[in-house]
Image 1 (cartoon, rainbow, N blue to C red):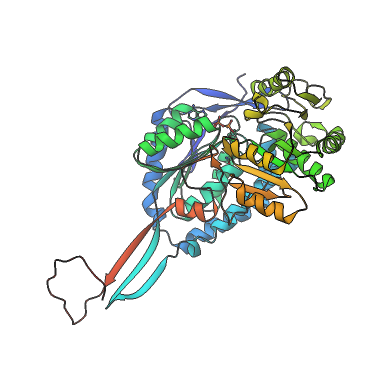
Image 2 (cartoon, rainbow, N blue to C red):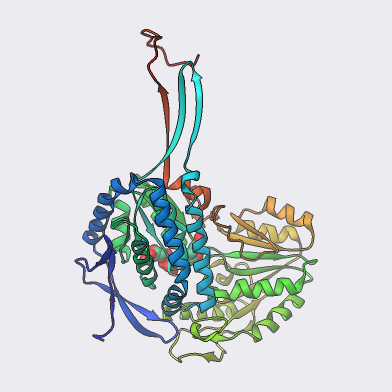
Length: 499
Ligand code: NAD
């Protein structure tokens, strides 16, 4: 046990041990073995990191836009050049296959590229001569120290949704990544230091609820960005808001794919398999329910089943299609839904427990699982399962499918598959979901739009990245200015009017 490394915090440009000796195990999900331990910060450790970020803030805020852009550009170049190293870390701690790990890094890189435009994005507006000799202009300024709390399923991409924009806008950051796969955050912060970021601007503190709670109440933290499951997202939103902070808090999901009878079923089956089983279903934008408008279900299921037969499950470094789940506990919880589905009367078309794996027998394996005729009262339909489980619900009409989707407590992503432009346009207008795909199964917006769901998939009104991210990490100041001239208005206690 003694040779298992311990992952430390990264504070003020270097590794830091802090005062807490509590740790959590970090597994390699493909072997089932503890590969590392990670420190779990105390409140004092978290507060010390915030103090470092607070001390670094004035100089970073006043660093020129040109200098900040140069550092951001260096970071972009280093990240692009070394993304293979980061992908290896993701595969080793999360389990996702190498190609998928690279995919999440590339989506994160897009946000770094977007953040390079910060001088343009924050340049404000100017109105000349609003009153005689008076000008009004607005500027966007940074907030101060901001906190980011991220989930296990995108250990690189979700931190990259936030810290490049926060930092480019002049804020300093304390990032608390998931304790299940913490190494990616340290790697990114070290890389940013190498790119020229001053010490203390990006700090990584590892931990669990104790560290999160300390971040939520620290008076020097101005804003919180959270991504995770819905109950925690709600708690973060309420607690941070009560403590006077800005909050953007993204929660869980149950994403439906509505398939109309006129859809191209080859395209639809490909999309269903990719979006249902990619990353072992551990994506907040995974498709987990197919709502099949009859009579398409039988044919679609046959096409999906045929594709699933060709999928390989195994160690993500070996070129397989799908890796393991994040922990044994999570794997067992997901597998438990197969029993629930049977008990609730669904047809188990494919049972993910019956698989051959290209990997260690102790890995956290579960193969692609497909249920048909799932009841909408069953926990299989209602719960966010977050694994390689795809449910088919059969409905009689477009309207019945739409009503089902709109009745869900979640509203993260959804997709419609059809060749009818009118139906697609109607769906886009009527569906109560924040991100909609039309013949696109995982409609994650590009970095210059914003990401976020509706209902219990997002608390607060601020989406992630894009224009919403820039607004979130800056606040507007309006300046009304007059330079002395030879004319004087004299005393007037009335409310100022423009003339
Ligand atoms: P999680 O809610 O368990 O953990 C997220 C973060 O919260 C972690 O950093 C964790 O340490 C912290 N945390 C956990 N329990 C806490 C508690 N009691 N108090 C304070 N902090 C706590 O989520 P996860 O399992 O890491 O990630 C998967 C979930 O994230 C899924 O529900 C998924 O849908 C969601 N997710 C949503 C999006 C989105 O964009 N909406 C994106 C990715 C993941």
